[in-house]
Amino acid sequence: MLKIDLQGRIALVTGASGELGRVIARTLAECGADVAVHYHGNREKAEQTAEAVRALGRRACVVNADVTDMASVQAMQQEIREQLGVVSLVVANAVIQYRWTTILEQDLADFRSQFDSCAMQTVHLAKAFVPDMIAQKYGRIVAINTECAALAEPGVGAYTAGKRALDGVVRVLAKEVGENGITVNQVAPGWTISEKDRREHTEAAPDYDRTVPLRHRGTDEDIANMTAFLLSDLAGFTTGAYIPVSGGRVMPAI
Image (tube, rainbow, N blue to C red; front, side):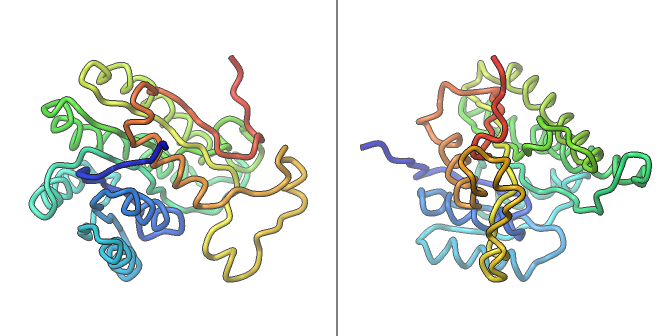
């Protein structure tokens, strides 16, 4: 029987105080990984996530960093090394939130924030963590993208631009580091049901659901499961991929 086994691995999840990040961190712990729980603004949620990881019998540490700043990411890398050891699994999940509107109305700063928190976050994480991966001839990186990058729908110009830039970084990085046993992939969620939706009973979205071939929204667990798979040795020959988890709403062409 196939099993996602991350025993003996140390993972970093950025944005692990957020709705999706918390579920990814717990899922990786369920698969056996120790987890560095990154946050920028919400330490309380990060501490709760770390406690959930420890409750699953895994080690955890809470680290603060500005993922748009190289020096801050480097400091985080050193802190994780001191507390847990060398990271071999990286999930780039953090993103700056902003108000969506049309390109003509969008503040220029929002375009910069999305580029910095999507594309540059991944560059910073690569520069900080890939050298250790190269040294051990093993590593896994998963960047959380979005169905918006493929659909390019109205009102999401800054987000789409940032995530499409992320796509370029991932594809080039995958080719540059593959010879070292390192894979670099993307998971692209659709509009995902989160813990907040469950609390507020807002899981159903009829207008959106009709656009999904499977006729319903995916869940945070769906995203976390695909992320864990790509971080595992079961996906050891998959790299440079953009994998939608959107119920068929996005189907990349060949």
